[in-house]
Image (cartoon, rainbow, N blue to C red; front, top):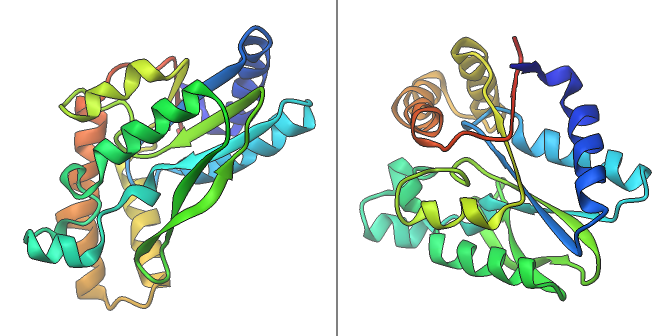
Length: 210
């Protein structure tokens, strides 16, 4: 397992080399909640642009089902679990991104707990697209349709104690009391994270904070 400290340099070099012969290169960055997927994607985007490689980020979080839908289905407390996402919509968007041309994608506003439609544009033309999300490499249906759509795959897998620390800090930052923090982390986030690590296909690159 390679240290996460070298992840950006390692990936930027590999992607730069692979993108040279591809009109559009799709990269999946997967991992448990709190693993640092969005942080890595943002840093990698900057590193690739600095290398002259045009790059965009496509976050999976934009495909959260709305709270009203989750409440109707009795899934609101499990928001973030695999069955609380619009997987079909995500698959359609990833396929459209592969085909090229401009694609408008939704973005999740965590402060308001809702997805905003067409909030980001993936521009047309030669470009690397970094897709980041928990379940991109999950082997269970319907998620398993996604993995073959990516040209390069990444898994971030920090130790369980570090994940717990980050997740607790995240929810405290949103003003939750300690009981709510424990419920979010122990009953939802960590079980989802264990699912990601146990049921995802092997990635091309695996990084850890060890």
